Length: 128
Image (cartoon, rainbow, N blue to C red):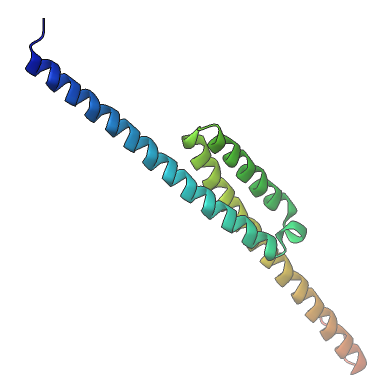
C-alpha cells in the first residue's frame, strides 16, 4: 500500500502531466489557427490578383487545400490541418505569381503588336 505522501506526489504528478498535455494541445491548436489564417489571407490575395482567371489550376488547388485544412481543424486533426493550410498558402502564392506572369506576358504581346503596327505605318519592314 502507498503512503499518503506517495499518493499525494502521484496526484501532483498526474495533474502536471495532464496540464502539460492540455497546454501542448492548446499550442498545437493555436499554431493551426495561425496557419489557417495565413492560408486564408494568401487565397484571398490570389483571388484579388486575378488568379481564378489567370492561374485557375493553381488557384483551385489552393482553395481545395484550404477547405480540406478547415475540415481537418473542425475534426481536431490539427497536424493534418496545419500541413494542408501551409500547402494552401504555398499554392495560393504560386497562383498569384502565375497570374502576374500571365498578365505580364499579355502586356508584352500587346506591346509587340503595337510595335508591329507602328513599323507597318512607318513603312518599315517587319522585325525578324
